[in-house]
Length: 307
Image (cartoon, rainbow, N blue to C red; front, side, top):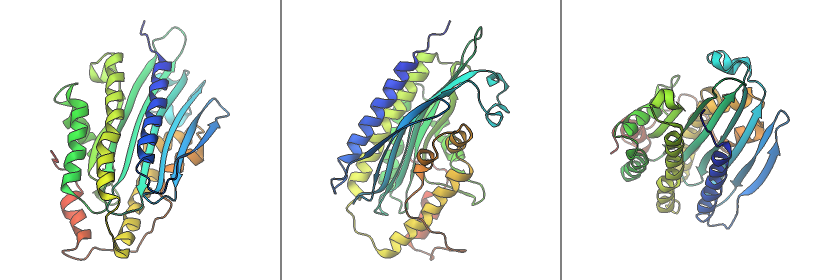
């Protein structure tokens, strides 16, 4: 019988939230701290949301932990997974989105999660998922290389094919079909990671999730530290707000975590924490030829080898 220590997963995720919040708070020059909002879910479970909003460095930074459970999943969640029908479930994870004030600093997103569905007399159905991705407004080759080198280092101990596979999945997942463009410069994305999909045992799958979770702050904090105090113009700020619109479109139309949270009666305030405080849309806007804004589209968006 498979031995799954759910409490060990939960304790790792809580410690990860603590560590990321502590490190990000050290970069906030205003002295503002993350505010914590603990919540309970009526159907079972709860979580703690941590948000730093209106800072000098972070216009809005949110780092959420949630652990929800119940006796059954909605039909929208089981329609393509009939093996989940009639099972109780637990889902837990840490999800974060960082929207810096300075347009020279990329937005970043990370998520690591665990899901298990059980019923008496049957083996549990379980998987891990997660990853992290970077969304620059003014691209920097050095930043992109560092981001992807850190992502690759998180994967290397698990096989040389792991980074290319999950890097490709990230490029394909964070793609806005209606815009025909990638959301940013990618990173890693994996889902449904279990023994059947990977050939790894449970302990290795858990170790891989931890490696990805731990790598996020190693990838992002150096970029944040170098770029947060750079000067910028009002025009660059306006472009940042315009490009944030793409972030909103993806999260509300395609993002699996957002959809799962809303379908399972999750806490809406925490689920939509990922949305930026300020954003704008412009009708049929096009970058000026040869501008820095055009360079984002020509030299950074789209799948490419950053290593």
